[in-house]
Image (cartoon, rainbow, N blue to C red; front, side, top):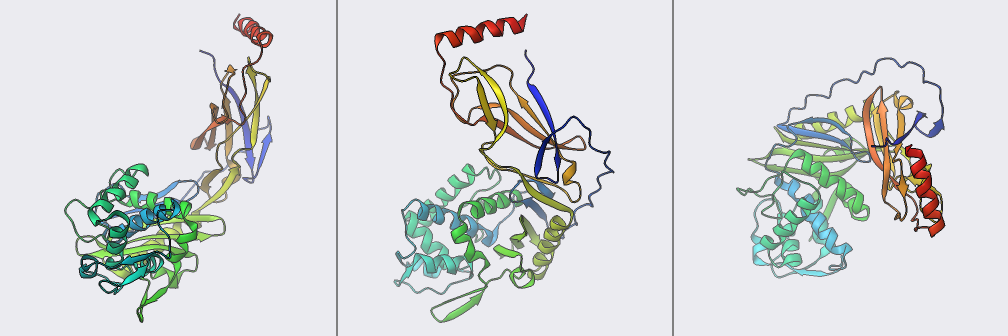
Amino acid sequence: MSQPLRMTFGLFGGLLLLFTSLSLPAAGPIFTPAAPSAAASSFFLLDFNSSRILAEKDADKRVAPASLTKIMTAYVVFRELKAGHLTLDEKVTISQNAWETGGSKMFVEVNKQVRVEDLLQGMIIQSGNDASVALAEHVAGSEQTFATMMNEQASRLGMANSHFENATGLPSPNHYSSARDLALLAQAMIREFPEYYRWDSQKEFTYNGITQQNRNLLLWRDPSVDGLKTGFTDDAGYCMVASAKREDMRLISVVMGTASANARSNESQSLLNYGFRFFETHRLYEGGKPLAETRIRKGVTSKLAVGLAEDLYVTAPRKHFNELKAETQIDKGVFAPLNKGDTVGSLNVTLAGDAIASKPLVALDSVAEGGLFRRLYDAAIGLLEKE
């Protein structure tokens, strides 16, 4: 079997891709302090852009998510808005069932009509269970059917340890999630719906003359924190999904099962500070831009530009980013016809010999099959190279 062509590049300053045959100076040992031992039943710390896991404990343990469930409720509603099935100004008639829902409330009144936008803010900022049920019934006809939609999205996002039975997070026997799954959900929420994510940083909301404050204490303590949600039930304990952005780096932390509202805030802050203090994230390469050129056989052209389908962000220990190395491995024997986006190799990034990231290299253009002479010529060249 033919071996892929390899080209190795040094990454200086995390910004320039330089062709070089010189070795980098020997780097000192890479030491990163261990993550803080959060007083939580499980936790997870994720870099938003690179998806690098910076800390975790029992991240796949199935636990009651309490009101963190409402992140998924909001996500489903946002998808309906994006699809044009719903508008923010649309009026929702509050049912007896929604009005009677226990727990935290927005204090909507039965049979009153409330705008979707107000219900979303009542759910996200005030954590209103009544608002959550009203939205679920309006979107799907019933909360049970809405839960099916929630589970469909959980499966699509790869949330392998989650199952939802309601839109609120009130205790239910088969209603659970995990720290990892909730981080994946938060990542999708922020990436797909930045226009609605702004509500997660809103400190208070007033409806029907009643003002309630956001229960995320970090919004007052740390200006870099801009979301997402807190939760509490006797079964779940105090839990929190938080996100913060400092300069160009965004982190998502999840803590489950802490002892108090203050503890969940403290543990979340500790994880976020750890990530920002000891790691850095930068975009190494822009998606859709040529990284290399390779020969393509039997095509209308003999040259093919290859690159990444999407931007590549990499997270590395602070002060070691310029020691990263990238190696392209391009398949030997690339033949037309070829479609734009087809995989033709891989880009692998390492630090001190350890794998940091690996992404497919793709064709940046489509190449049609060449004429008879070109095909015969390339076939002959291929035979000679095998000898």
